[in-house]
Amino acid sequence: MRLANEIELEHIGQRILFRLPVAIWSMLLTAFAMSLGFFMLIPLVSVYYTESLGFTAAMVGLALAVRQFSQQGLMLVTGTLAERVGYRPVLAIGMLIRSAGFVMFVVASDLPRLLIASFVAALGGAFFEVSARALMATLVPSDHRTRGFAMWSLASNVGLALGPVIGSLLIKTSFSAVCLAASVMYIVGAVSTLLLIPSGRQSRTGIARRPGLIKTVGVVAGDRTFVIFCAIMSGYYLLNTQLYITVPLETQRLTGSTSKLGIIYLVNSLVAISLQFPLIKLASKRLGSLQIIVTGVAVLGLALSAIGLGAGFPAVLASVALIAVSRVLVEPVVNTSVAGIAARGGEGMLASYFGFAALSIAIGGSIGQLLGGWLYDLAGDLSRPSLPWLAFGAIGAVVTVSLAIYARTSGATRLEPAEAAAT
Image (cartoon, rainbow, N blue to C red):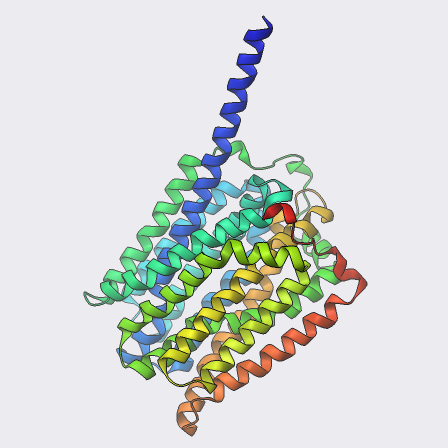
């Protein structure tokens, strides 16, 4: 009888261990599909609409800013919805909405229709992004979250590597082919989520007692230390978003070809893939969470300023590699820190904290798209191509100093240290 019980317990353990990796592998597939679809299309938008349809960089920046602000700005609402409905269904619905939005780019030949397509794509992102992060944080044990989010970043970087290359090949057929292929990736992600992630894998304890939207906003917005952190991090996202607006435009200007766009994103992702685990392991051993983030933001500012100080396309490639280093350092640690703060905020607040944190992406990313497009047009009018990059370097210095000062405050200790166990 004892032997039979031991065998039964062993089988139960094997089933549990089998389920968890399947769910995580599905999340990694979802991250890959989201990134592949996004980077097939979005890096080509600025070049296609300026070169083929005669839009100004500022007009394209406006459309991208609408996508950015709408997506991240709605995440507090969709995060609250996900807490009540469940992360898994909200994630799948968002992927399908994003797919529809990308299909709409096929007929978006003027600014109003481009803005509508951008908004629908953003709405899908608002549903799936916060749900995906919260679900990933739920599936991975708290003492391994940095490793889990590093794996998530790794899968995303593989999609980032392949997406622009595939997009650059498909656009030789037509821009419509790029839009349709990108939309299919989100259908793949939705199907993977529904089939491979068991519905019971997310925490649902106390779901009926979870607060409504207004109370949730009050609780999260009342977390002063967290709000200040999000406000400062909006500067990071202002800079990071240049990878999708001014960097492609500068590459087009220097090379005169869209074929080189695939190369810059390939370099960016290959650097991130190769350094994701060794770099975060080294940083976690030597630095705390905020120190890692400060270092990453400083590297980003230097990378962008180097484009203005460098000589041609090789300087862009070197800077893009440094942008990858910055992302490797910053993003897994930020996700882990937000999850740790949310855990202290109370049960049922995980997606809500991620949703509020997304406001820094909404504000910073939107300003970055608008500012980047405007500065790029201004630099062309003044015949001063280094102007945007020196401005971004100055902004990077301000954000770095602000984070360093913030790190010395007592409340900043609430940001969970990067776990040695995660490496």
